Amino acid sequence: MSIKTRLKALKEELVTFSFWKSVRCEFLVTLIYVFIGCGSLTHIRHPSNDTFLKVALTFGLDEATLMHCVGHISGAHMNPAITMALLATGKFGVARTVCYILAQGLGAIAGAGILYGATPNKYHGGLGVTFIKDDVKPAQAFAVEFMVTFVLVFTFFANLEPKRVDMGSRSLSVGLSVVLGHLFAVCIT
Image (cartoon, rainbow, N blue to C red; front, side, top):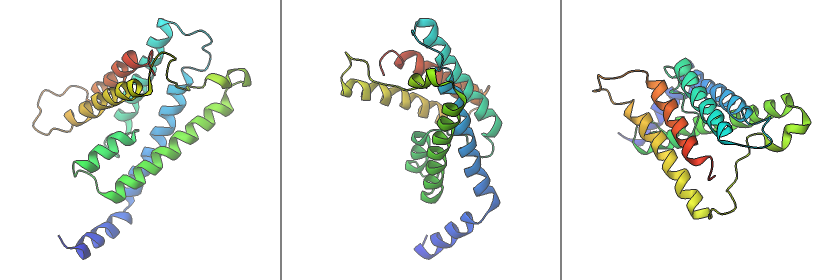
């Protein structure tokens, strides 16, 4: 395909209603994902194992619900790692990737801002802030985050396989991978 043909196809894609609808969906679902997911941590003063389960289930059910709502429109990535993986595998073009990542970033900021505004001041210190635990080295934290992100992307891609006939709920399987990642990593990072 020549450069001229690619540029023409890019221009045609950028002016379609469906393209911008999918970008708006990514913004909206990322906003909601951050608002609800991080909101599950707002009133926690002394984390316990029950707290970690609550957070993991909130993020996972949040992901599954939002993916079910708009997955057919935008894919409901809510995570630049998924969008970048789609680019790397040739399933997404550069323009769509850039627009999705911008929408995801702005949606996350908006969701955090709304949560901040909707939360009493005394809880502002713990609004879903993640940090590396004292006894964990940065390289270890990176490895943990890399692996749980890999599982998320792996699960997402497993649901894209057109030859699968055993499909149950695609959104639920991705949501469960988020629960799994949180249950494993929340005590570390």
